Length: 348
Ligand code: SAH
Ligand code: SF4
Image (tube, rainbow, N blue to C red; front, side):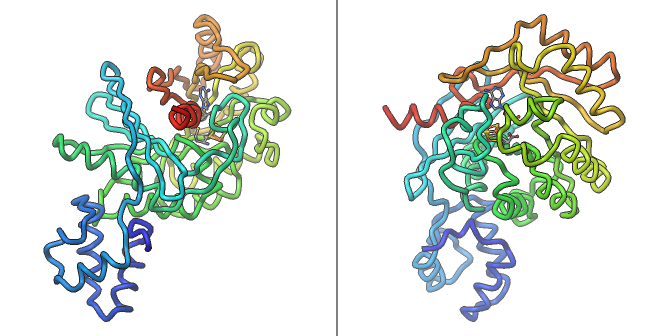
């Protein structure tokens, strides 16, 4: 059985052409699945009966089993555990902030980058997700919100995994979510967060779509960065920033640099100065994320005074900066916690 959500509109059109059906069937079926969020072929009432039966024989839709949801009602954050047919599990988080409804999605089960401060990175890599598996995380919450008369407004690729190491599937998922026959979410509603895979950033710059790009930098020096983000030693910080500047030139989008503050490791005034020097003249904004502790991670969160001093130093040097505390921490859905929470859920 094939997963219908793995198909783009053009691929669906090819499929219908191959069985001698008119091209407009692609639009009908895509709209059912992605816009009306109806995943039962027998309810696709504008299709002839024989075709509904044929589709049900060949395709499955949304092949993930929703497991437990955890909710932090006070904060408006909700975490959904999805089990995939092969036993892999992924987690997706919905954040409600004012009128914003942001879904934070995973692109891989586990992550091969191995950041030493990230619970996902520490627990290793399982596999890439398919385009359908990436997108259905958004669609599950879109369905839930629809029942409440609401919509998903933003998508951030900040769950488990490194999106630019699963480039094709990630881009396909975003393009399908962006498609006017589907949720029709504008490109600017997506934020791709990457650890700085240079060829991936350059490729993204050439796609001609204005996604928001977040670069997880975490250190102003190459040796320190290699320690914290092992796979990043392949590219120097300079190479990452140069590629990112190409992205800015192509899209005119302001970049967010993410910087996890680890007490006594990368949170000193000297690092703030070096970071400011690196980003001077860039169309950039720095998000400072005080470390979010998880079991087994060998770091501490810096005290507020140090966080504020780091931020002041950046501002003083003309670099825009904001402090962002992870949301979802109480339901183990904070940055870097998703995989750890999943392992915990599996052992229960
Ligand atoms: N792999 C991509 C996207 C997922 S991680 C990336 O690294 O950019 C999303 C963000 O969460 C990254 O900026 C990451 O550095 C941050 N993060 C991971 N573990 C964290 C932790 N323990 N505390 C705070 N932020 C963390
Ligand atoms: Fe992977 Fe991002 Fe975690 Fe690093 S921070 S291990 S890149 S998910």
